[in-house]
Length: 362
Image (cartoon, rainbow, N blue to C red; front, side, top):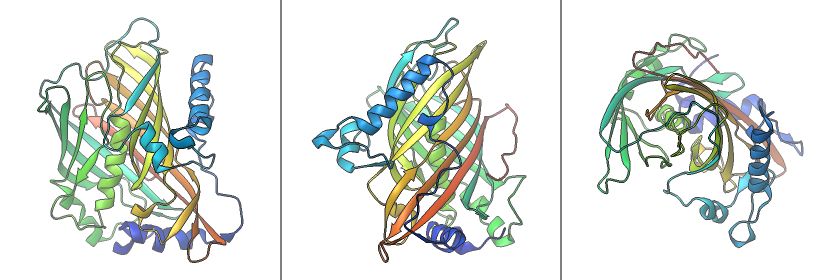
């Protein structure tokens, strides 16, 4: 598996790496994701099964603004997305059950200033035989009340960046030399106590070349959307579950994301959570990914995560995340041709002092 600087940028990733690897085909079915969509996975009990079924029916069948609805191919119009959650709004949350005793209050319980540290290690697969280097980011996290005092403003600053211990292949020296330049980059969001959050944005350090390792920061910000979950205002115990709905980006394309969160167990002041994610593409193209002019025919972007969260903490102590994207596009230069793209991300987050494992290549 090789690397080139042109394949680090988004345009290079999907035109130089992905498309030749999978080729093009005429009038064939869309490629299927390596993992089933979140709403297709077997539920652990009847309540979860009913919740997932209801969410799928709502997402795929209910009328939205102007009679618009989510199409079965995973696409959502801008008007329909705006009717659900306008851009910049806080995410929504619907609690299905508070679970059994004992119960914990999860998430921040006040807007008092707080600080913490953690390590985010992520691996990005850009095609069947291509991947970015696995990178570890040491984060310094600062939260404080906003001007209104009703929400938290949080900034996650990259204190240092380095190659992960496990890599998908030999890393060229010129690529390895770029990794530490991610230092000084940052991520930002707003969140409400006992409620939702805004989408997570990022700002690249001045030394980061646009279109090269900036893609790593974009991937990290998208993974943080799963780490920074909205929590119910009520305490929850084993068997509790809730659904979150948020407007965010995935592989630089705008999506409406649904996450089904379930409390798998309680151990002292910590909860083990499972998260199943299903995303819908807003619009019919993924222009932010640097693809040639195209139309998306089918879109699937499922994700899974396991989190260990302490009571009152905004971020988990430990987390493992896997996100995948499988789409079929039709090139405007030849509408009769279609091309499948399959990419993915895998990451782990470990709070300071909790120990670090290597995620390796996805």
